[in-house]
Length: 219
Image (tube, one colour):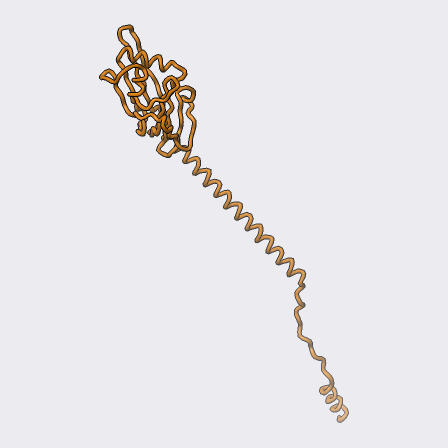
């Protein structure tokens, strides 16, 4: 009996195995770096895509704005034409010089230059004098410089019913050295320069109308 107790005591007091707790393995530095690179890559992709979308939206807005302005400008486009009407029946003769706005918007006539036989004239008094006439009740005049022509409006700049002076005007108009230059603008500030000799039907687009200086016609 004592032997059995001693054996039991030896078993209970004998050495015991200790259990080591589980320890998580240390993270692999290389895998962490790869994850960071993947994250940076997608962030860069998203940034590039966002920038591209913003540029496309800006381009679309600018294009639409330009198209709207072109449509609006076309809706108020002026087109000023110069024309003459004359007759000569022997005993009587007449001459009329007119400006007509054939466009769809108002025309702001900024400046006019009249050249007769290669020399600019300052006003109708100067023009009539050069053609051998005098201002009288047989001459009707209207002003055009710095005025507005509404769509479809026609203004007779000068109307001559004196036969001799009417024939002088008719001959001057046929002279290659005679011309009328004029510049007009739309309400949006788009301006055109026209010349009765070669640009009347195809006026030149200009940033601003020329002043013509001393050659400006002041009617």
